[in-house]
Image 1: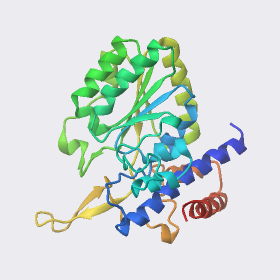
Image 2: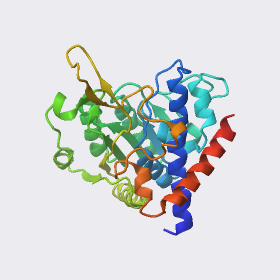
Image 3: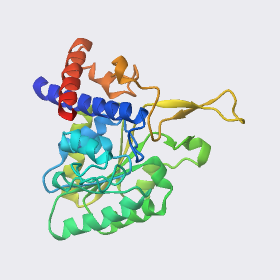
Image 4: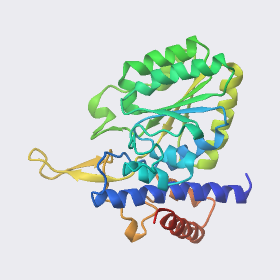
Length: 308
């Protein structure tokens, strides 16, 4: 990939990061009447999914869909207006955040019901097969693996020979509990093997690596007319300390929904973590910090102009 193309993608990553931080600032000031699930830390996978999509492809999302909607639309204002329930919103203020779609950009369904979108994606993927359409990409979190629709839909994707990428974003949390606190571990690779489905795990938050891998997997799924199960390791950035009478010293809780107080755009805190958990840190493999800061400052100016 040429450096100019990498720079465009880096700007996309920063656009999604800063857009969410602007939403978070308004959220902290209690300006919204609806719940919003931010996806800070999910920027690389959302950009990669958007980049590999062709015009005929369909994207089916979850309640945490903000990064994908930003990646596909490339505009914050219509999404922000939707969160304010304005008629100028992306869906005329009728869906809010958890069910936000963008049919013109291939996002035809998002669900606030955990695991519900898997079953819907099965029908959509079957319809695409009948009309010789594109691939269906469906997202879920690690919590959705605990729903029966995950198992049933995976079986149907395979049984009906459907070209589908099922992407599981594993941040190891469901609300305020880690996986080991709430259930026995689920080995997705073994699960896929039982259904004779190709399984791939990706990690590292490198958007360029993700694009290359997902492009190949998209082609394989279309050529073989079969689903592929992809587990992507993410860290949903943002946190707070939960204090209760039972836990007077407090417990670290990873971000789930609402405003995250530990992130502050006013302090120019674009990079949240100084390791590979943060896609902005990963960009430093390709650009020096000064160049990233320059792109970030330019992006922030453009965003403020867009939404004023």
